[in-house]
Image 1: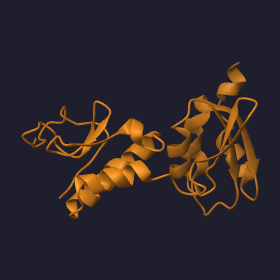
Image 2: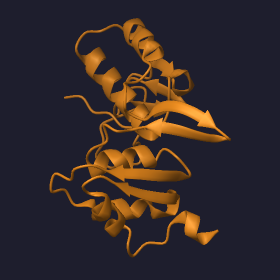
Image 3: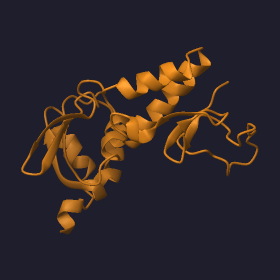
Length: 171
């Protein structure tokens, strides 16, 4: 089996460590490394390094190398990957505000992952709810300068924050 994570997890009891002292594919000193301690690529070389991007890069490394890819092949792929459309895709910058399109984030866990990558956000969310619990979005309140509910579920998005104080409200 193959395991991965962002942290080395050396603090976990009952973890079998390799000769390099690493239990799995992880990030050490800003590098994605193998369980043997081989440096694959620096996190700073990734197209974007939001927490979920780094986790995805480590997972891709673990999967590819376990499947027979070469370190150099994985290194090249990670350096050349430029993201996917509508997935925290940079759109433009205007008056010092950067705009991102994450319209593929159609479930709360995807919204949480994206917003956690930023310190301050105006969240524009809505569309059609597929019966999912939007209440979990309230944990984002400390990062939100503003909230706009749109579409069929716009009122549900706003309701999810009804007992929250947004960061923008504290200023």
